[in-house]
Length: 66
Image (tube, rainbow, N blue to C red; front, side, top):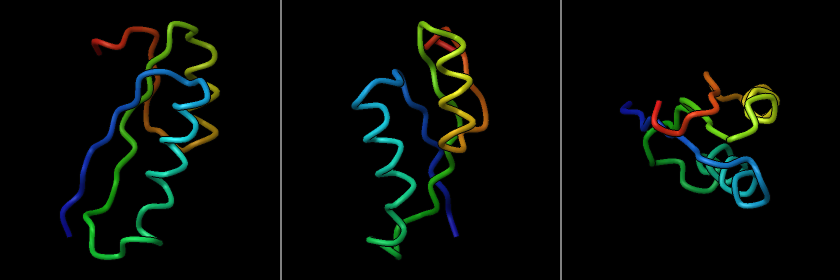
């Protein structure tokens, strides 16, 4: 099955809401491609790293352009 790589900018309220939604999407929409949580960016590098670990993102960074 195909997959969609997903990157997220920001780890605040909306970042958490979107991360949760993308993780839950297959339960609601079983026919969509697999969502691969590629990376998360936040100006607070430590927050980005914690967020990546908590939500299962592959990488984290303090620079949204990466």
